[in-house]
Amino acid sequence: MIGKKDYGLYFVETVSKKQRVSTVKAAPFDPAEVTARFSASGRAAGFRVEHYGEINGFPLIALTKRATGLRPRIYLSAGMHGDEPAPPLTLLALLEAGFFDDRATWFICPVLNPTGLVRGTRENANGLDLNRDFLDVRAKETRAHIGWLQRQPPFHLTLCIHEDWESTGYYLYELNPYQRPSLADHILAAVHEYCPIDEAPVIDGRTTAAPGIIRPIDDPLLRETWPEAIYLRAHHTTISYTLESPSAFPLEKRITAHRAAITSATMRLIHDLSKKSAYLPPSQP
Image (tube, rainbow, N blue to C red; front, side):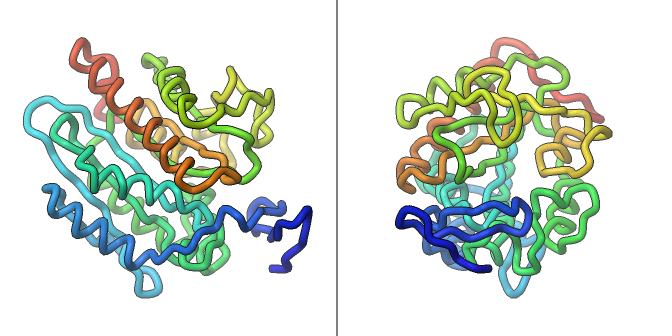
C-alpha cells in the first residue's frame, strides 16, 4: 500500500473500501498479549476459555459464562478489523472491571482478526475483509468463527463492536426484523454523555433512520455479501447492533463511548427481560 499525505496526516488505501484511511486510528496492538489477558482475566472471572482455531500462530478464542436460572444470552464480538483497536480493548476493560457478571449468560469473541490487528490493517494477512466473508466464507478465521457459533444456542442480543474512520461521531446499525423494542435510542443517549453522535443524513453511504441510527436492508436473501451481523440475524438472533465509534477521536474516548453503549444495551435488555419476554429468540431465528 502506498501512503499519501494530506493536511499533515498519512493515509493508506484499504483493499475492501478503496478509500483513504487515516493511520491515526491504528494503535500499537499485540494480539498475542491481549488474547493472553483475555484468557487469564476470563478464567479468573469464571469464564470458559475455548481455543476454537488458530491463524498464523495466533489463537482464536471465545469466552463463555453461563448464569443459572433464566438469564438473557448476550453475544459480543470485537477485533474484526485490524485497524480498529478500541473494540477489543473495550471488552478487555469491561472484563477486567468485572462487568460480565451473573446478570446474563455471556458469549464473547474478542479478537477475531489477529493478523490484521498486528499489522494495523482492516483486512487479514491475506487481504480479506472478514466482515464481508460470512456468505462465501473464504477465510480460515471466518470458517472457525462460524463453526464456534453453530455450537451455541440462539442469542437474545448480539453486539458487534467496530470503528469508522470517516465518521464525525458515534453511530449504530440496528437489525430488528421482528420489531422487538429498540435499544438504539437508549444506547445513543448513554454515549452522548461522552462522545458526539454522528447526525449526518447519510453515513457510510446509507440514509439514516434517525440521527446516529442506520436500519439497513436486513433480509439476508437481499444482501450480496454478509457481514457478521447479517449472518447472526440469519442464524442466531432476532435483534442485533453494530456499534461504530469515530476513529479520529482519541483511543480512550472511543473506549469510553463503547463502554457506555455496551453497558446501556445490555442493562436495558436485562431490565426489559425481567419485566416481560420481549426479546426471547425463536429456536430457529
